[in-house]
Length: 326
Image (cartoon, rainbow, N blue to C red; front, side, top):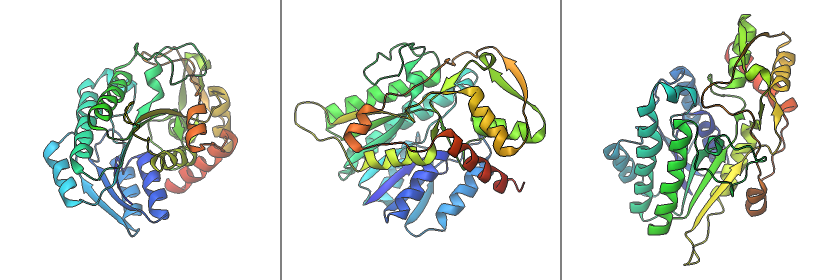
């Protein structure tokens, strides 16, 4: 199988490429290496991928129609697309809104058009987000819940991607699966995410910002478990029965909501150093708690996360120390 993976230099994209290459797939990686966070980290991930046979890379922005058309022409054997490229981050969307509409709506549409016209794409898998649930107070979050009240632009763009995908699946019968990721962490993680932010602050002896005065819970999901779900879904495209669109939408999380303060405690323990806390109120666009109902993806593809934060955080910290030479 030849799989086109966008966001290949990103956190989840890098791990997904690794898994696909390890099982013998050919991978065409696409990334624009934007400077939302440290480009050196992205380049280091790419360098590791480039060492492996079967990996090719194209530096391109998925919202650039001409560039992506060239990628398609250069790789006519692509049989599946995993669109993980996106402008991430709830708080950044407050100050750079056009980055989100460009990557998460226009870019997503460009990738669907690529799948539509390729003639060979058997499955289009894409990243959505648990943020689409907004201020939903019903827990755990289910894919059957209403998601028409986003509380951040990031969430709104991710929901738009789901709706556009459904319409393409209906109109052009493209087998399409969306994945609502819950908070992902692990080795090679993003510097703007909780585990990395906390570790960096603690190591530097700086205060860590703890929002809503620490009264937060998240469905923290280890990246290896996430990738198992992504690949499992990839291998099980929805079937076109001629009636309903060949379209699936799943939550993908750890199926357990953890206290933020417990998460921080494991980071402290793994580093052997206590944090200095700076308690802050809830931030605009944030939610107090997330929890994933993963029964649908468990039923359809056998997804079963196995990594608790007590195991996953020490593995992240081990990588963090090695990467930063600590």
